[in-house]
Image (cartoon, rainbow, N blue to C red; front, side, top):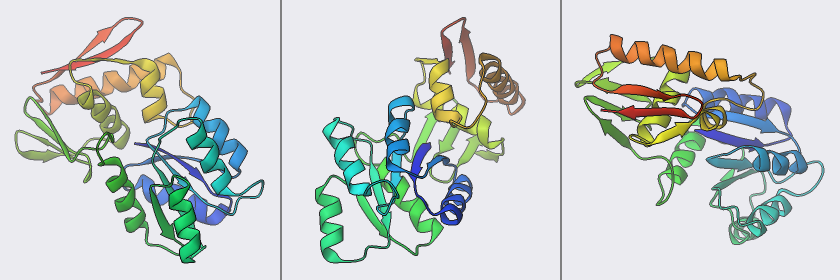
Length: 222
């Protein structure tokens, strides 16, 4: 899951990026409202973590711009503003959740998963295809009932394919969902990733296969 983080406190922001990576989230970090807004126009995100005290303007103004543009990406406000009126205003402006600093990383990850499990959200609890089952919350893959370990990026690619089983997944969607803005991604990067995943699925005896549609993308079938 690709998350946008708009937070201007360098140490905290880096801690969130690294902490959420351990829970299977990829995070793109920006430190101003304008950079965050621009990022939403160039990348597809599953959710946004938004600080309110940003250096160029208040985070609530950014939230207002997002909702005015009919963007309904789930937004979790992360702030030290602990007044009832602050929380009410944030939720009334269109925020989906509100978490006060300081916080526990596992709670932040749990709140993100809860947002993404809402109706219409991208995060289901488990996905089953053929003899493989992916628990997207626990980031656990099972083949024929036994747990197997695969590298995080391959797991991200597999989840993307499983969520769209029997549908063509364009290469661009891999770039947006599996890699971040700071990653140097080329068509060869995606091809190499899918090739590694294809070999791994064969090794673990998964009864699914990845089909390549030249110049278009990839398709997962049982």
